[in-house]
Amino acid sequence: MFTESFLETLHKEGVAPIVTWSGAEPHLAATWNSYIHKTEDNRLLIPVMGMKTTQDNIAANNRVKMVIGSKEVMGKYGPGAGFLLEGTARVIREGKELAMMQDRFNWANCIIEVTVSQVTQTV
Image (cartoon, rainbow, N blue to C red; front, side, top):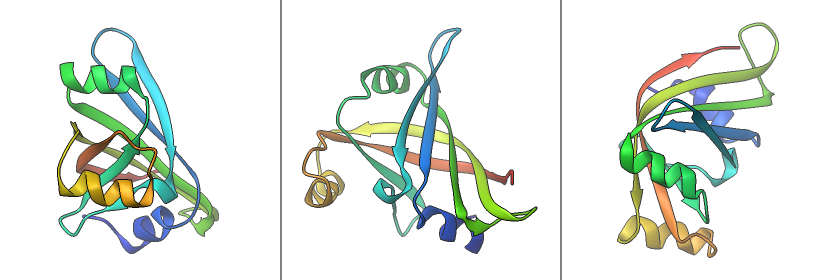
């Protein structure tokens, strides 16, 4: 599912917006590419400290959209690659994956796990 170009982009720094919604108004939060951990089974784990509205929206509607991009990767039209991700999310508040992420980010009080169902390269 993840192309080499996507994986290269994920490993370069860039802002990674996360869109959630539970009512009429979408909510936008963001993290950094370098904070995102891709698991062996292609889930994305994102450390969280805060993001209360994002967590509330996921509890009501687990669908999410994200953008992963970096100007350091060659894209479809020149320098800069970007990808739209669609999938589902859940908040993890305990367990081995949270402990692993807290080893890297001691400020994280939970993680958002994103199971990606679709990836579209936009640029």
